[in-house]
Image (tube, rainbow, N blue to C red):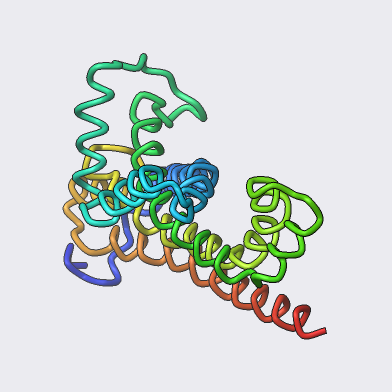
Amino acid sequence: MSPTSFFNFSFMPKYYTMFLQGLVYTLLLSVCAVLIAVIPAMLLAVCRLSKIKIIKFLSGLYIDIFRSTPLLVQLSLIYFGIFTAINLPTTYIFGFVNLAMFIPGVLALSLNSSAYVAEIFRAGILAVDAGQTEAARSLGLSSSATMFKVVLPQAIKNVLPAIANEVITMVKESSICSMLGMMELMWAAKTVAATTYITIGPYIVAALIYFCINYPASKAIEAIERRMRRGDKR
């Protein structure tokens, strides 16, 4: 069978473990990045709505920089800049996840994701009825207490589906880490293709794995959104 055939999967018996490891690496990168991004994103969203001009400006500048520059550039600056100076020791978890490469990848992805999640939170905060803030203030709560005890909990409920969608997006965007040799799914496909000279099959396998992760997840999110809308109507 031709190496360029769409149906040549003769490499799988020998290299399937590489794809499984790439899958685990990809999921770890994606989930860790979004979870780490949530807290700074929440703070950025609050700062964006601040009445203090310098805080509003700095948070907006951060968001604009990370949303207006390519993720690959951000990853390269963090990996070759910050972590060349820090020089993390080579430590493996699960036998194949090198923390010296994994941590810079997670940091770059989470910093990038926090800029987008911040805007999600900001939209969620603005969607909370103004009467909620007025009621909280009339009960004697301070501005910060009103934000963190009344507004943010309701905003988080509103934005949960959007944050779940960000995880799906991050699963796909994590493939950029393969450019720096991180052993995620796309790296596995490229390595198998280069080793076996089967140029299409490995990428078909990677595409199928991405699809099997993201399609069911997107359908589950749609079901959750429908359930939440029904709950809001009651």
